[in-house]
Length: 256
Image (cartoon, rainbow, N blue to C red):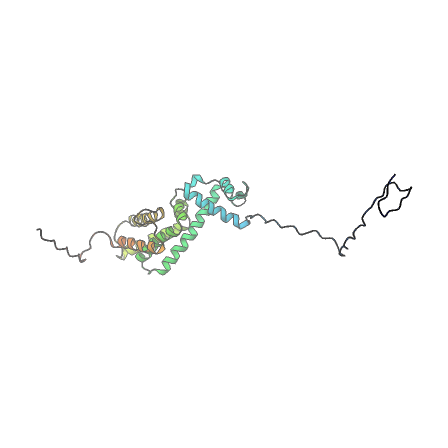
């Protein structure tokens, strides 16, 4: 039998006494629909749009050809490099040849813009125009070394000559022929003159791009000065001209 504690009356009908605390009142919920807490938005992955991927493929192909030549170009490797599916490049280019054509078009567009600006700023005579082209060639190589390397690669140079740059080549050939007829240019084979000019400017551009001394690390302004000096030598020639003043010889010191 349960023995009541102090202050509780004894009862034969009570064997166990349960003391349950009174329930606490719950706060009233606000009226209206129940809303879940906002979730943090995940950042959407960067994806190429229709035009962006094409531009990225041309740029990546340009770098690949500049580093390893035309044979190093592979569309699946480019897709892996850009982080897209293997079939994504084929939505913009049917094959490797189509991508190479786009690379050649990109180089031609940039190079032609440089040539046009240089020719507009130069005097109209054929020799000045031809020198302006040589200076622009060296400047372009200094500012766009990857483009210049691709221009020098077998398989791309032929495309450029046969494409947009071929018209400029023929135009300068005609200008030099006209200048020869006027007596403004030496009566040498035009093909030899053009080859000499291209060899001179291309050699200087190659030395600048590849960092050969003494022209390593030059900037645009220095490249223009060098190209101006080199093309001036080409225009003047190495042999002394009749009637040209010679520098006086330095007097020798008497031997002791």
